[in-house]
Image (cartoon, rainbow, N blue to C red; front, side, top):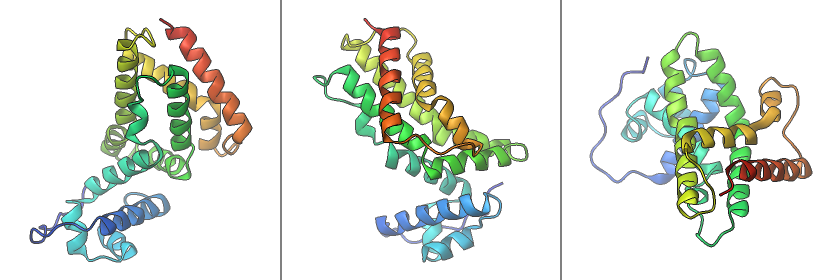
Amino acid sequence: MSETAQPAGPGRPKDPAKREAILAAAKTLFLGNGYEGSSMEAIAAEAGVSKLTLYSHFKDKEALFCAAVQATCEQRLPSSLFHPAPELPIEQALGALATAFWSLVSSPESIGLHRLMITVAPQNPDMSRLFYEAGPQRVLQDTRQFLQVATSRGQLQVTDALKAAEHFCSLVKGLNHFHQLIGHSGPLDEAQLREHIADVVALFIRAYRP
């Protein structure tokens, strides 16, 4: 499945700017050409780096794909949102998290990656596993930890934090996410999003109020 990895170069410090360029090139080519249609050589050329530099950052195409998925998540959903200050009201903390999560799943990169995985999965189920572990599973685990901390602070009463995280993420995605995936409609506008997030947060707090 993965292309043959090349030996990494000497132990020089890796250039963060080159890593970012590689990740940007990988996302562009994966979304444009698909996973199998995107070679490491093409990604290196798109990023303007040598193959040696590319392999010094990522050992193979699978590792690069996972890193591209993780980078997409971290860009739209920074880790700080999962660790709000104790004095922040739970409504505000949930609202900020829900807004950022919706921005992530509704982004062109995320919609494109979901569509890509739907086409890849029948021929390459391992890619589905890699995608899930690099993206959705990490978000669910971080949300679970967020809810566990909120429960320990007395802000919520959650007994099964993973199930509650699934509920939360599903509520945020709503029907609009499915509409975007099938090309039925675009994302919510600003006013619609504010109303949607307020509804989600209110419903979730009613379900898990202490």
